[in-house]
Length: 627
Picture (cartoon, rainbow, N blue to C red):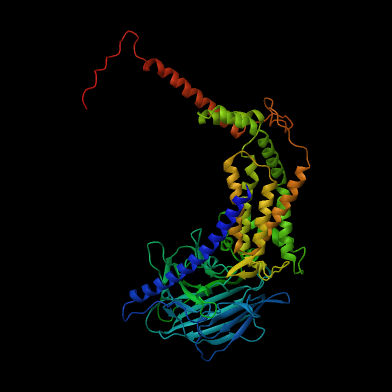
């Protein structure tokens, strides 16, 4: 591709980026205004409104009342991984603090459920009725204890006892709790427990650079995993927003909320909930700036439909996970929890990449550059694995280049007969043992690898705060400065430049479609990586550099010979001559020849019937007259 074409592509790419940011900002403002108007117009007078969107304050203010705080501390050996701050207001977890996970913009630590007015484990029903009762500690709750038991009696006479226990297990690093809820009806009237559920807490981006589409709510029921990331399950193209989403379920295994790197989910033990609910609300991540507003999600898991008579009681239990989305931990918490990572179609690639990068990191654990080195070494191993295919495809492209004079002759010879030209082209490929798609195979193979790494690094909490070279945080774009509000991220630029250089070194084929695909690749991957985790751009830049080295090495090797293959030989002058089965393009060429022969035979058979009898004279045409 010439210099002018590259300049046009770059200018168009920058224009698209600026236009995309401008359109997204305008669309978010329009959506926010429209949704507020819909909520104002749809709420009838005198009825209870759904929770309003938080648009002015960065946090939901908590009510100031007498409280009895308590902490459960989860440890991995002597290392403190999580601190559960309990509250007697609702008898649950006020928030969970992670001493090893620092805030991006500040010196504090990451805390889950920080922006909620209610405790994780509080009784709730469709967010319209949250238990605001203050509970009494009846057991545990002292320094050094691994459990605490709360008890309170509601206005309807329902006595509620909540026993919280820190679950043991080195595999989970203290990120797991057990909650047992016991109901006892001390009143005179029966009480339906389905009127209540448990509140699972909140999830939202921790700062503006986190990906909003990674935040949402999810559940696993009837062998199927469902994830909703719309805010708040909001508008489709032809539907308005739903302030609260109610889902009927059967065989519920778990349900919860998550952000890009953290999650909270409840697993019913010994029973199955028949419904869950979720809601979304807008929060402000900084100084009333519209560009810093994000969606926060909340959820509840309802108790089964059961009625308690006087003095009857019923118990339910949950295992609860509150912590980072570390796959090695989450998959040990319970069955079928792997989908929480939400790796998409190429989950099998992402799972392997996650396993590999963590094991490589263990070799350098303790060094600040360990995660960057792990990504580079992982890329090196992948390139070594696909080296034979890369080598073969490069040789195929070189041999195709040598076929160009013969292909040009075919195009000139059969310019008026495209079908015959294609047939002869396939025949030419077959005679010389050239696979025209061989040059695309490495790129096609790298597509699932790329998207697997793309998904894996998008949720890799291990990369949070990990520095490498000039990159402060591999989980964020590596912005070095801004021009007119446009962030300049270096690694995606390095990735695009090395990809273009790599393509310059790659032998060019005569196929226009392949050349056009290769021409668009740098631009496409540039957009993929630009506002994503810099770890992805580091991976792709590394693989480009390694590929350049491999290509330069191959240029020093002898050129592949172009010769017609012998019957039963693999390829023309580029193999050992061992017999093998016919390839796809050989079978395609033979099929095309058969079709061509059948069409010619059909035309030949039709000619005699189309001719007029020899003894029959054609009718004379009467002369035309007048108009």
